[in-house]
Length: 418
Image (tube, rainbow, N blue to C red; front, side):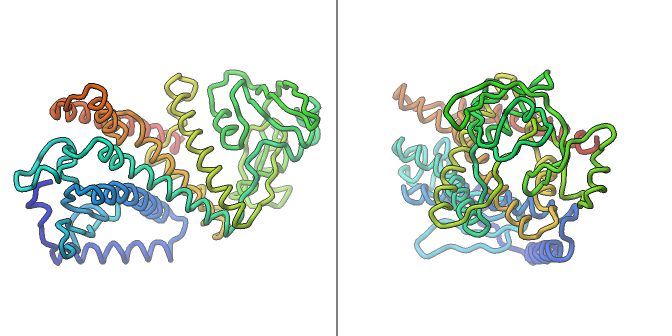
């Protein structure tokens, strides 16, 4: 962005636009909960928070190391409010559209302003400082996720994350095989699945058979392998508790009607016939432990998902674009209870924040990790990188990411319409 664009003045139209957007957001959130527009607004606010936090991480690190920052903006589009602090050349602005934010650093790739001293360009800073600036956005996303997980656990409590079986459904394949309460799943289909999240991801892997093979550790320490046929069960969205197995005669709708249940609170899923502990735990110490362990498990799981995608074990259907994220927000918040909907929303925000951090640290052009690789190249070769080559590589990366996003979006739309 040019210096002139940074100094653009707010207009009456931009003020009116901001006021209109604020009124629209408040009215939508208060008076039209769980509608299509409500879900879109919540999703945009969520993404705006995560992007702004990410950019703030880059900003504070850049300021710390004396990199000139032209502007730090919350939102996009026309500038509404802007100011400068005494002795600080950075323009702080609020823009009309609540869809993210950004900060513009001087010399991210090359010296781009003849009026600035050379030491204020990021590209001229020591390599360790450039690395810290590049990873600070990711670290802020990770920190936000840990804080959200901690707060969520303190307020509502959280369920156990290990794969110790609590109950075995009567007459299920699991009971027939001899699996008992207290047994612990170690692997599923030869993939490590020692926590609930990894078990769910493994269940999404391509599997032509209608069976799953489990490596189970019994209470006495012995281990056994079981191959179980997967059947459909009606389960609670909020607790995961099994209601009943479905069949041609005992359909989902019939089970809901016979048990006098709210259809929106239940879903039909393929299961092996057992369930895990759903009791909630609270407490300060537990919340700290949960926040860090959940963060670690989720981050590791993200890398496993990327590995599964690269090796072809997981299809693109497992990824979500904007439309898919909309459906996730709708499912997470539309659960009957406002409190539980808020719980789901906070968890989803933390989950996406970790996802955003992991994706940005990947060594791929256009990501922070891609920029980091350019710095690593300079460290190894002891030569300054070619700015023009870096720009072309980043452009190719943007095109590939944008193309993938379009493909995933179309898949989400077809899935939604189907």
